[in-house]
Image 1: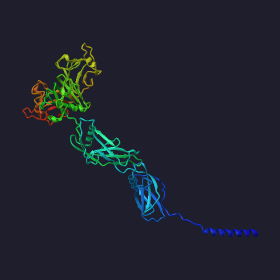
Image 2: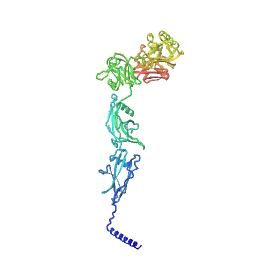
Image 3: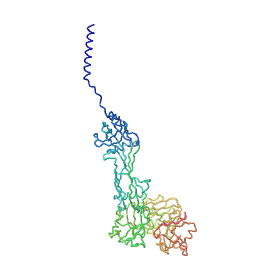
Image 4: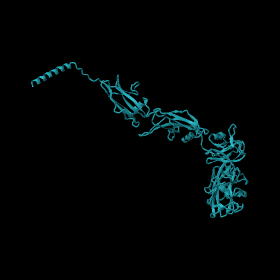
Length: 598
């Protein structure tokens, strides 16, 4: 036991001696003071344009160097900070930037909107600099699109004769988006009358960052906007950029530009006037132009043509309203082969066919100009068809009392007829057996014939009525090729009214060529009449002066009479036409008590 205690004592003295010797040579160091930017908890930042005031990021640092109380925060797109940007300052050990501020900063550093962009941030205080931290930032667009062409000096006169040529091309830039941007941005172009703040804008789609339109399409657009045809108008244009997002669509608008546009009229004139030596009844003056009335979308009428030149005009007595051959050619019309360019300095139409009467049609929808056989009457080949035969109760087989089936318009003859079970035939000329048309002729021409009619099989193959005897409304439709029977319709007291007088150009004051105004049904007499500024009268019976009805008679019976017709005050108180001479549709409505000129 004593040996062990002595050994422990010697060992203890030895350790004390060694410890004292070591203390004299030991050098203990403290960590160096530092200026350190702490790593952020997240390095990916998606900036939300709907929360512009929210914090985008917060950075925190430790300053053991006591660098001061004025810290500057620097941002750089490269880790070497070759050209850093100071984005803020702080007097504490942290710094926060809002979404809107950081978005603007990142875009200014060269980022493309909605594309990930790396930035580096550090803090400086005098000559002391922290380490840097990095963020991957997805910014949103702030700058609106910028229209690069055209500018406010742009003017365009739209031309009907250049429908497919380019009238306008619009281009723009979107500064926040690079060429390789993956973000889907939809653009539209808005057009409005200048000064309306796009309240009722017409919107067009775009092709990328451009838009173009032809004369025809742009003319329709600016007329829809509200500009006036044939007048210079001011048109505002702007570009709208749309980005569809879950948080709500993002929309940006360019500044507007204002351009000058002169559209052309697309309204059809009610009458086309034909003037020229080629129109034999007109010649090269405005005394007797040939009038082609507009019915629906087609101008049509009979015209006497010879081998010479002529032109169409939209306004009576206005040489400036002429439409020549190249005009129709330019807007895409197919023109009858008998009409060519006159090559006469004015490029009029030249008729090269056999001189004579033709029925000319200008179809503005199909874009055709055609010539065909002349049409007698307003819309039919004949003023009326005549019905003769034992099957026609009021006629019989003689010409003493044939029944007239008047033209009621558009190639249709119709009227009430009293029928019995016997034979009859249609005729195109009164008192002319040679103009008859029998059942096989209509059948052979493709007509669908009412089942109440059969072939009489009587040697002449007349029509035979096999239905219940009585009064029917009979219609022969040469356009749709049908012959039909229907219930009796309220008609008129007379088959037609007759117009005679100097005011009716084709009649005059005689019974040689009175103008008929046929009953078209329901107490209405209507037809086309060429009128001039003179007197005339209505008559109920052909060649009977005693059946005349003058202005005061209609007036006294409560009729509302068109303002173009007045009392002639000529002793007989006839009608006097005081409108613009021309061909009009005159309608006497005995049911509603009106007389109209249209």
